Image (cartoon, rainbow, N blue to C red; front, side, top):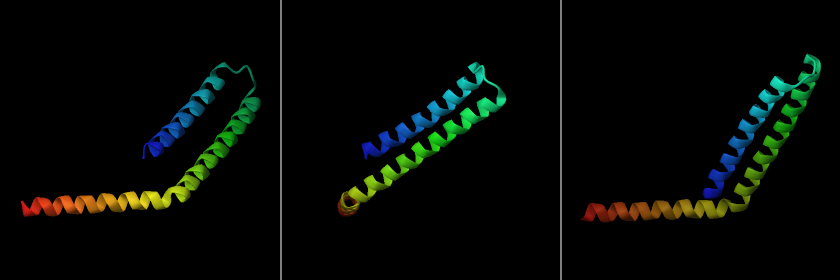
Amino acid sequence: MSKDISGSNVMIAFVVGALTGAAVALLVAPASGEETREYLGKRVREGRDKAREAMDQGREYYQQHRDQIVTAVDRGREAFQQARERGEQA
């Protein structure tokens, strides 16, 4: 589960970094409006490609670990059910 959280943190950091980089580029770039738009368009396409790659990696991770995830969820449900039954008997 911690890998899922760190993966989402990486994605959030990537998006924040991309937005910050774009803002700084606009503020300090000595380029014309057309050049700046081309640059930003290129960066957006790169960001979109990286986001797709991260999403594909997430799907692949899920596919590879699906059985383990389902087993862990089932065990958690069973443990909860047993604890609840013991609580009702007490």
